[in-house]
Length: 91
Image: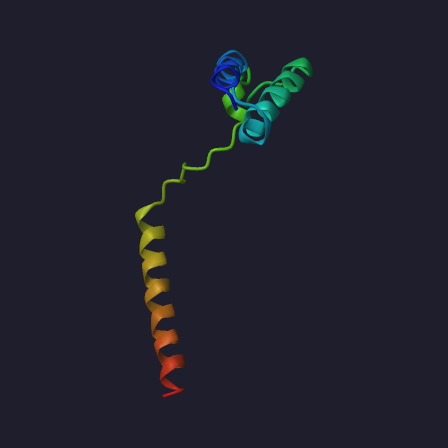
């Protein structure tokens, strides 16, 4: 690829943004946003939807209560004991 062609591709992506599979989530979110607004849809709080409402949220975790964390820790300890007992049978 020549320097001229590389520069033209950089300019293309600068104007049009990334495309293809890399940003399929954004393209789909824009489509769903348009369809939802066209159908008169609104969120439960009465506000209009935003494109961000349709984007996947990979890094968000639900906050856990202290009781749930304790139950998870107790369950993990019980699982460890079961695994240790199971492995001990084969020694």
